[in-house]
Length: 457
Image (cartoon, rainbow, N blue to C red; front, side, top):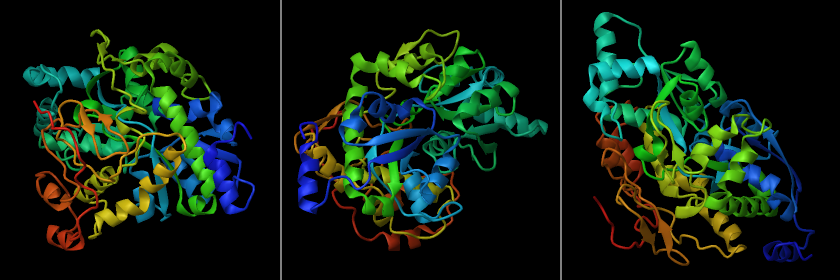
């Protein structure tokens, strides 16, 4: 009994049973650096410590993850942050209520283009490629030139239509007046195949998680234009997701998984452990990429191009700091605004209700309590207000947070998503803002967390 967490002993006693409802689990992942918490939980024994026998299943695509979790082949998985929302709303081949009670990381993606496209961008608008973060203005000039000459549209790849990557790429393009659905072709390519497609000339650029942009750079095939940390400082990236019915059938098991992943995330995020994390996840059974390439971003440096020196980027991957593991319902609302913006949701829905059905901070707090972790006491927070670090005081004890700026200076208030949507010139809204406003008359709970004075600049 000495290795059994206190919460598990309490749960077994309270339920009158033997503890965990299910101990042998299969959890899915995609070969990306942000699968690290699952790999660390497996390799360093955090799952075993929680009484779990976990097999990690390497999946070939996000559609596979969606389908296998949906039909129960996988007990849960490393998921795109919008995926529980999309699955629950039926934005795909089927509808399956899905929940997340844990964020796996912040940041970790980049937008990369071929060397040839970069050179043409520089020829047409070198000034737009002088100071980071780069806008898509030079790309807009290339698109206009190709249109005038009757050339084929550029092709960009994302990992899944309803993904963080898709919304990041669309946001960046839209800010420069580029319509991603009319001015270029968007295609879906699984992350490990991005470099192959770029090498073959089938795509001109992509938005993907690490290490695949770094692999393209190391091979001299592409150049990174902007990271998603630059697009939106400390943005949500992946989550751990399960079917709602699974969470309800196996609540103690679910809590054990969450606790193990929290411990793994804390260990993974420590700077001194990052080289070991890179060694673990680079293995063939996980990412299957050169360890020196994986090590670069994982240890806090990033290389935009082969002819440029690596630069310090300590927050490129954040697994635990800045409340990175907390499933903010405000993040869920932001993703829902993007689904609306691009016509993927074509009916008026209550955004807070949809967010609250899928993102479960109540379950997170229950698991975090077993480890004595500080947790937010609110479920929503505004974004875009902080250029530097700040303190979240609406928490069981103050939590140091990172910057949260958007690269275009916009702010996002989850209490007023309709006004936020109204501010975009480039969009494909399929529902009237009036109807959407009527469906969102109640304020989101906890939208104004206490903070230290915001620092901007």
